[in-house]
Image 1 (cartoon, rainbow, N blue to C red):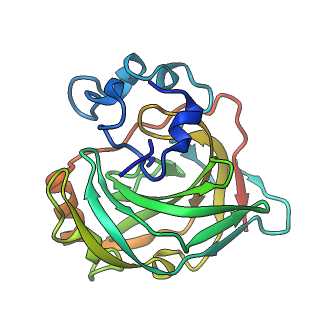
Image 2: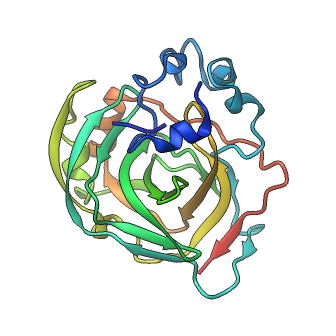
Length: 250
């Protein structure tokens, strides 16, 4: 995820950073981790111990058959708006940093939307299936805790609401202004999986509230291809649940 400024260092220090999921410039220990060569996901524990020994790691395999029904009332409410953001190539993904204004409430706690970024293929699986891409919307509460909304992205036939971000991508380390319609990016159905997890990139900090929507969105083949030209694979494999409960909400 994960998740230009956020996600070694202590978890408290990581969560104090304003808005990133995986910027390699903020911690020397993170400089050399990768998805496909060198310090690959199986070795991330060498640069961030929690990645190797954590007990609440993400992503995970999700199942509509085994998830426990979430008790009413609905825990999730989204309040996303149009915004002018900053698109940056972090070296691990394409990420849009956002100004204040959009937020969600989950279980009575407000989390402000600070950024979103992409992975290919999807990091989570649903009923054993991965999607071509997954977008992570990273939110932060006043106490520094994170909630991340994951949305699966399948291949469609037309340009998508994500097209302003996924076309004309900046070079690594460069930024460009981008206007995004966050409300249009939210699935119409708020049915979702919920579980306690972690950042999906080093330092793999735990105590992240994960909300993965059961209904995804579509992006065009051209949009997927443009992203994969820069990032052919930037997804961490699924991690064991280790006794955690996954809920499914309305």
